[in-house]
Image (spheres, rainbow, N blue to C red):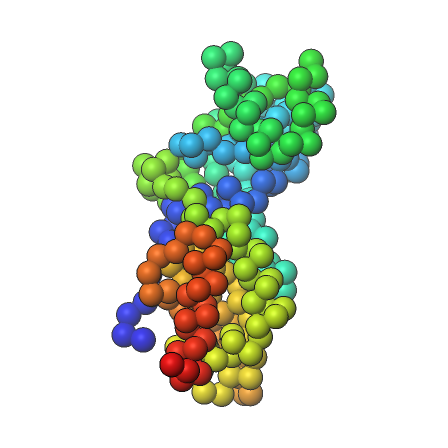
Length: 251
């Protein structure tokens, strides 16, 4: 191909990961042992402008840490790759965590329950409170060789990819039921005649990524573009059908 196919921006990719993957590693500064990074697993939701919302227990170690020092980070990793997690995307959002103000509590409560319906069992307990991580810095890693500190203004303005919820189902369906089509994509659109098998590892509104395995040599990652942006699983299906027909030389 003459030029790199269109991709999501780093800000869009990072926001998509934070939207799709609703659990992450919260790091706070420990009170004991003093000053050491303390990691814990938490669930989160996202505000429209890109701040994670957390529901934390007063009894939790991380909450005790935050009362002394509100600096924290939330690391969230994508869940699309199961064979090689280090080749998958991840986001680390840094900032200060503060308990939700009374005026915003109802809105943040609704966001948390939308992302985690199971939290309704305990969200109104006296020892649980809603918190907002007010993001000041964002580090995005999109796999090997694709990384940056994301511009904060871009982070706040970015929208998650419209396929954030459908992507996993699309990937699983293609890998499980249409392995032959993936090989055709790699050979025809990627120019890799020696490909024996291929695996879809990512999909978004602009296209999809494959790992192509050849009879010799190292696997190659390919980025293949749709003919136009798509925003539903049905439109993705139509694009993939069109592309495989082209790759096979059919009508």
